[in-house]
Image (cartoon, rainbow, N blue to C red):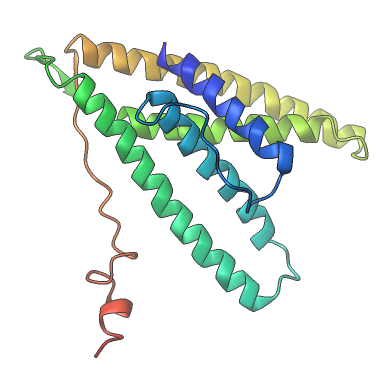
Length: 201
């Protein structure tokens, strides 16, 4: 099942990041380039670094200049994240390219890769909520609240994993169509963002 590979790979990425726990540590992908595991690891590592960048930028005493630099780094990370999601969808498009859809086949509300994107973020929530539930200096009330939230996140993980596997099974069987719409983000494109293209006038 794809969801099992996702979870195992995402957890490995998260564990490896926290060995150094440094947003500037170099990404070393242990999987063969072009494989699904390579794409999943790459995807989650981007998410993990961005998770910690989002923590840093919320420091109320952050230097404004440093904050702007971080905001632009987060913007780039979001673009990288989108790019890798589309690479994952390209993988599935190629994998199911010869599947003939049934006459009553329908489209899903999101592509497989965007569902996998949500699972990647969910694994980060689970990791960090578990940390909070075990934080030594935290109050028992805080720990209990986090344990309750963790149970919900784990249930959500089961539901989302099953949904991803079911979606891919339905696509493979021709019950659902494999169709992808590119994100076509505009704010990073100097030909589409009026702030950028008007700057040269």
